[in-house]
Amino acid sequence: MNTDVLRTGPVVVLGAGGFIGARLVSELLTHGCPEIRAVDRTAGGRMSAWSADPRVRAHTVDLVDPRAADRLAEVIAGASCVVHLAASTAMDRGVLDGGAEIVEAARLDLAIADAVRNFSRSAVLVFASSSAVYGRLASERACAEEDGPLRPISAYGAAKVAGESMLSSYHELFGLDVRVLRFGTVLGAGLDRGVVPALVRQVLDGAAELSVLGDGTQQRSFVHVDDAVRAISTTARTPGPRFEVYNVAGEGSTSVAQVAALVAEEAGGKPVRYGTRKQGWAGDIPVVRLDASRLRALGWHGGSSLDAVRRGVADLLRTGVELREDELNRRREVRT
Ligand SMILES: NC(=O)c1ccc[n+]([C@@H]2O[C@H](COP(=O)([O-])OP(=O)(O)OC[C@H]3O[C@@H](n4cnc5c(N)ncnc54)[C@H](O)[C@@H]3O)[C@@H](O)[C@H]2O)c1
Image (cartoon, rainbow, N blue to C red; front, side, top):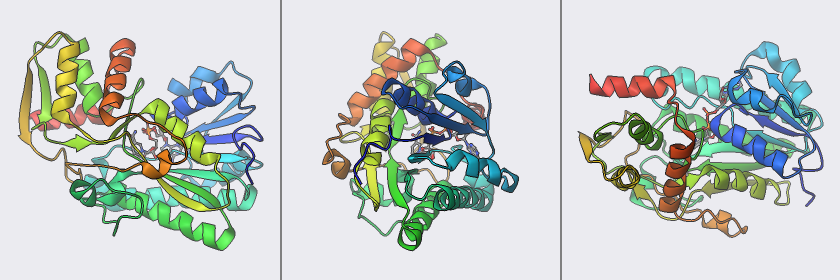
């Protein structure tokens, strides 16, 4: 099948109130998607942005709540594409209750896979995974999708591997049509956590110098949120049914010191003060490099990682930054 699954039927966006989900809904609207079912456990915020648009139906549902199974069935029924972006993204949470985080994510992913299997089996299911599945392997080399063994070092990464594995088995057993996207570090307007928004916030607050928590040697393969969203539409449109995995990242990688230098330059040459830590928190991988050649072979272009940072910084300086509570807490903890 090679029809445009983003135009033929309802598109379900799970986690639509999040950073990537909200951007995806806006893009789908711009590109003529006739019906979007936007689902998140949190009402208001980004979810209220489309309240006047008749093409968007907003649903407030906690997808791990077994009592919500009927609502989930209703939301999934008849969809041509389901984009699953719902997850707990407080990265250091797994340090405190790793088992609980893995179990919650597994229940969430399973509930969604079962709903697709039972109520819209021909839908393309796009699953948001992460570079965290590679663990330290992504420090040794720019990982391609077939690299392994996958040995995550965080509960978050372990949960993503579990989700991918479960969907692989559902593809084999029940014919689910699955695209797994292993995102690098996504950034752009609306991002509320991580080093780039934290530095931009300091600029907007008029800090005399910029303060970086780590020693600046951490490296990431960044990708701009617009390109991350284009990766979702590009891969959703590839013919299936199949189970395919794609890395989503700009070319190369960028160090935190490069990010800080860029932000400092934008702020008129402010000095930058570094901490001593190499690792942000237990489970954080100091260097993450991804190879997105497979995605580029589909015609997707995400530019370079450094270019993604430039664009993201410009977006955040223009739109402003509101840091999320868990990000603020982490920064307070490191300083005390
Ligand atoms: N942003 C990144 O750099 C990045 C990198 C790698 C992977 N990812 C993955 O991409 C996806 C989207 O990331 P994001 O940056 O938009 O995260 P986000 O935290 O901004 O958004 C996630 C959304 O999911 C919702 N959600 C969580 N649990 C839910 C539940 N039980 N029921 C209903 N809604 C629920 C949250 O309320 C939130 O709005 C996630 O799966 C994340 O793990 C993101």
